[in-house]
Length: 338
Image (cartoon, rainbow, N blue to C red; front, side, top):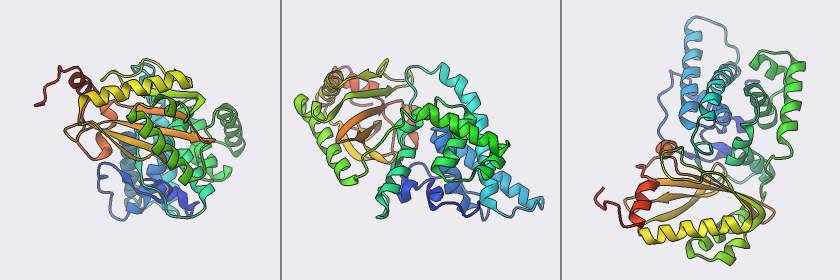
């Protein structure tokens, strides 16, 4: 189990690319190599960069202390996986209660990922799919144990005997958990465009149409049942509920574009978000006030996620602004000196 598939080491480099974010805290001596695989599991389990980093730090500390106590650890990576998964399960249990009182729709904290090097495009797409915002939202419907089993088995290719040891159950029960988890997510599991070239070209057309106010061009790029989700966390204005359908979503995006054009200085910087096309929204002072992620399949945009909760943007490596300030400026009520 210690060898594991190479993708498991993706952590802060999902699919082989890098991730933009705050610098991780130093690991105990000799344990830095465990950080990427532990983060890869913890982030997919929790959908939170900060909480995943906390799990990484606690896991590495426990591995370090176990070594100091003289405990025989034949496979450090297997040991770290077990510790990290159990810590994440515990955090998920408490997170469920917090998310029940969350204002508006909850979306994961975004990761800005670099494109992976050339290789097997199908496998690269599978890895990116497991990191996508849409997939992480879908995992919220599972119990913490189901989530752990599904990720360890279907994403990281662990055997059921290994998974049973990680979560502290029998192999038969681990298989049952996987069956139930797949049954819950299979019909709604997102399917993404395998061709990176086609996907990125469509994303460029999408953002251009949105910025230019081209309603017809935008509608042509959207699936009939496209969904637009927003997460402001009650901190800034955001969608009260998801918007469904090509016409309603297109008109909402055009309205957003008009606000940005009235404000002046707002820029949209295309990038890769959680392994899929997206963009960072930057205000006139160079502060990030939002991230947009796209789900593309079948030559159409199937889903759009808008994350403007400032609490979910601080790890992206630049000062954080506020959508509220942008809206105030668009109405002429903002303080340009702020």
